[in-house]
Length: 119
Image (cartoon, rainbow, N blue to C red):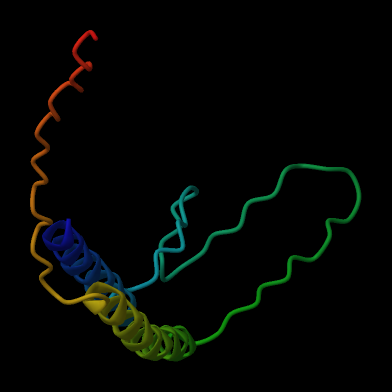
């Protein structure tokens, strides 16, 4: 069971490493689609309605803000993981790192009690 936990922990570290790598080095996918829009150019569409349309509001920040947020998350994740690994290692070591299997207890049936001879 201990070996399985260590292997699963290693797999989780690989998944987190890939998530951080893609977040820091990749471009955010804003799922922009339709009307010929791309990541670099957004083409607005509006239904035909009578009267004035409400003005759209766009909140946009440079990509550097996204990267700084991802960096802050990655740094927090690294410090949190160190604490979690320390706790896990202490829990794994409780009672010894590689505990031997408990010895098998062999029980022998006790002889049936003897009845006293008839008097």
